Length: 453
Image: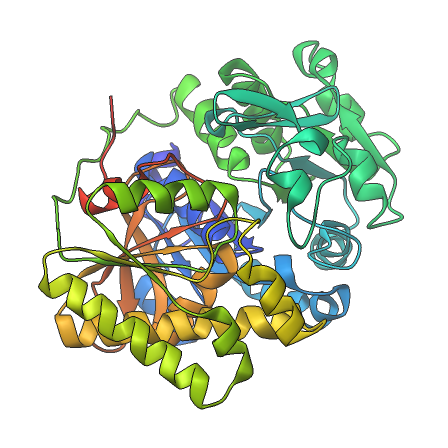
């Protein structure tokens, strides 16, 4: 029975490497809330940390590969893959975003696959990007994603076609990956999946197979495919759709009982939120917060990029304003931009030049320092971070080394409990990718999460 992995064996069901922090946390959430306790390490765990926390159904490591070059991947991923391999997990999962964020030069999924095949064998690699529960669908090779009430083909998606780093100009997943690797790539389409020809296809010539998935019925078929082929194709690539598919298969075959939905952690009016996202979705959430009892405070990103006395003054000013808000009974939301059309972005680019990674690092770490000061000085026990890269830099600044899922919100952005060697241990923290979530997401965090009807 699969339930023996839930704390009853030292062999995990799945070990995963996330290509960003919020995406890595999404896998932990899917497994944990299905009754398969899991932990996410925010950096490669030490032997002592693995010994203390490794008896889980799932063990994950977060990285920032999505924002890194192929050269960085070549240097860093082999050691991370080796660490995952050492857990003896039944499946090894390289976790990508369900909107396929990547390019040949930044966050190359193709390079990650090449390095994975060197470690885990020159076997076919299934790529499961779709996640129907997130309203992300793949049909006949093309990826579709929701924006508001509508579903858009990825290259016409109002957010992803305007992504500041990896704008999506191609919806066909195999075609998109072919620009990142020379490994032959094919597609297991809906007809093959429903006609039970998927395993036959995957065993044929192509070495990378993107997999269609449109419904819960398809999830069960994909889960069966991944699980039954785990010895031949132990290494898989995809979004948390991989785990959704596995769990659907386990539940429908009686290997795993359905878990009760987790409840709320309870409302806390004293919390703080920081946002380094430039997504239109985040802008909508900031606007909602402004209209619903949050104090929206701007942290001047241009000053931060100057790395001088003005940068220090900008941090102090935002921190002081946030403290004033808390003392007035308003939860502060400290942000550096409000959407992709915010004029501050052009000013940041002009100040930082071509080195956007440097400016993003400066902004993320400054937001982390502001949040750390608020936690210490105001005795906060719940916080939230908006922006995938920002989340990684904030957690590093706070000294958090691992997370466990505690209460759900939107899929992929649960409230977690932090693991840290120090005062941040036990902190409730939610990490949200920029394009994720409902308009009232920050209110949901304030209310303590929990499933909504």
